[in-house]
Amino acid sequence: MKHLAALALLALASVGCAPTLRGSWEASGHLGVADPFDLDLKFDQDNKGFAIYGTDKGTERQVPVCETSLVEGRVKFVIDAGGKTTCATLEKPLTFTGALGQDVMTGDIQNAPGEKVGIWRAYRRVQK
Figure: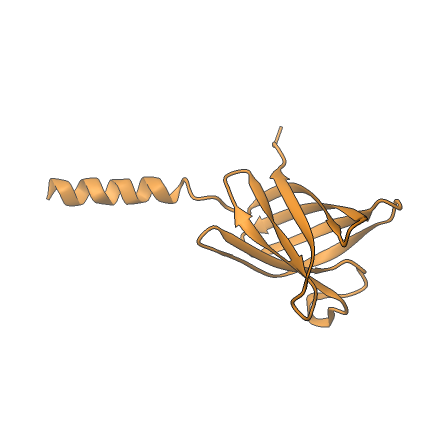
């Protein structure tokens, strides 16, 4: 019985240590060879969020974060950098996939046909 109680306590403790998307993230990356971007991500829950997408040309726009998933440390979400859409009307979806650590995410970007078109990385913003 003591072993079962110890295993249950260990399982509960490990659940609290799992990385989560919840919070604010500062992301950057590039599409193609020379098309850099910044992405301020905010996840209210592990599957609900929004972002501010900025380019090196100084344009910024709020974009919905769609189709978000987090499974076994792998994150996926979709944005439309044009910003004129909702999740139901994505015109040029970009799918961000990658690995999630405690305070960092990194991965690839695919276009609608599934071709790799860029890379990205994000760091959790420290709450003050």
